[in-house]
Length: 102
Image 1 (cartoon, one colour):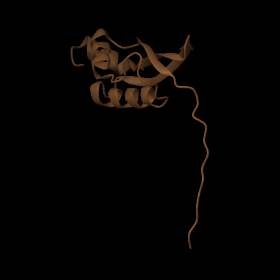
Image 2 (cartoon, one colour):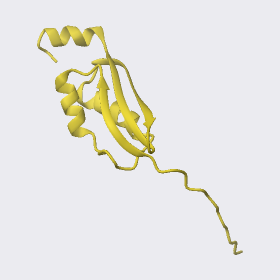
Image 3 (cartoon, one colour):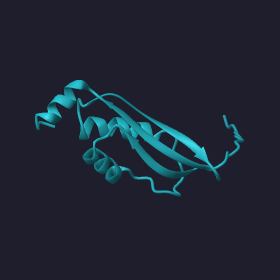
């Protein structure tokens, strides 16, 4: 049996990566995050990348140091998405860092 299939789809607007901001990361972790972050301003924006990146980053670069992580994107002129990575540290992580163990 032979079957022809036609699929029509509409490509939506292309969004681009804008500015990257962080909240709740130590200066050292922010530097590591910026170094590991792949998209550059002007690259096509992937709506899933920021959360996937932050989850992976928190598990590998700072395991157990955050009780909540997340990202937010805000559209600005010309379909540019500014991205904010946010993390809330655990109380135990703060004790480890003050003791020089983190």
